Length: 191
Image (cartoon, rainbow, N blue to C red; front, top):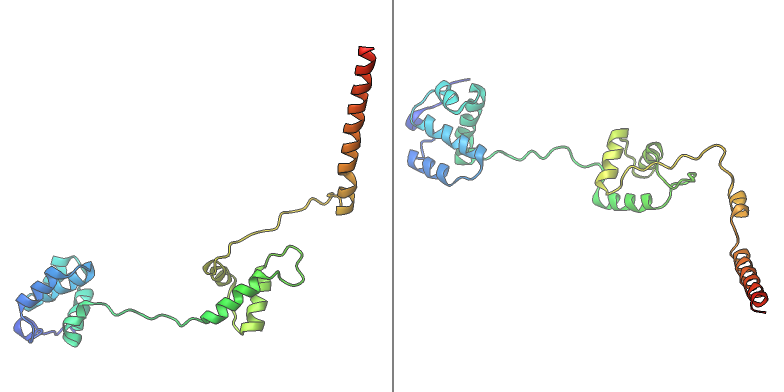
């Protein structure tokens, strides 16, 4: 497992000078470290000594050097991991935003709950998520968590509130009466 070529046998088509120029031009820190390990191995250093010089574990340095032997100079760059494929396509996400902008059925507050959203996702898009991922999905779509304001149990109904409010017509009558009363007093005062 630890048998790797060293010296001129390591990367036989590439010279130390070429490795050093690549090292000097490289901007990525991790790629620079990998190239430096290749330079040391090309000079005939042991894996333990390279690991000590670079302050990296022996297994890490061995992995870098193995990559250089398998892929050549391109071993300096790490391969991007694709990750898990998305479960909702871009068009499905756009449709979901439209669905979310409409108020949820059977909910007077107009706000979506996690349960309601999970039911919608399962029914319409045939996808199941855990609660935490439902929130992540909402945040990624530009929504935020909102809670309806709690109502006091003694709060009057809308009808009572409208009866309690003053009518604008009544206010007008009061000001007119005040103006007339003032004018009447002024007449008495002047007379």
